[in-house]
Image (cartoon, rainbow, N blue to C red; front, side, top):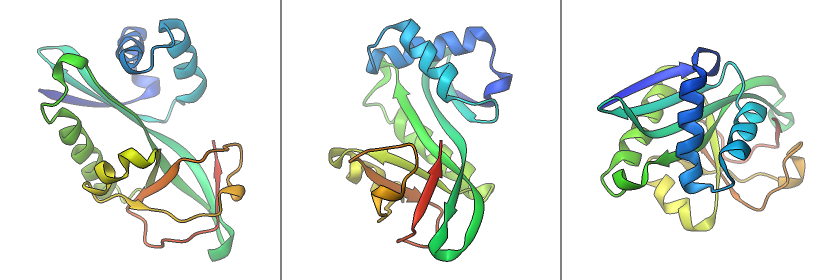
Length: 168
């Protein structure tokens, strides 16, 4: 198995199409809808992790580079990466592929001293906790442009209760 790490601006149309086909296995909104979502939400400097088995794309996820502000600690602007779209091809599930990809992401984040967060449902909290992700207690009304009841988990961050403002 081979993992490629590419910024979005380095992805060919062929790779983007393969990513959208893979995503459609889990989020079945149709290829065109997934392609539109990708174009609208994945920016040029976002980091894409592609896992290949015999040159076939079998798993994917993305770290979406964004800015955040924490008024409670007077942090003006800092980069944060949103962990997004972890997907494994159906026939490769339950073989530890998502674990490998997740651990690889964590190593990348630690090596580059990057802060990351993700959104998840209650049923997934324990899965992410196994990989060192912690619940981030925030006042959800302070999140700009994103209304959700999902849980916020963070990785590689020192404080647990920020007054967080996230720009998408």
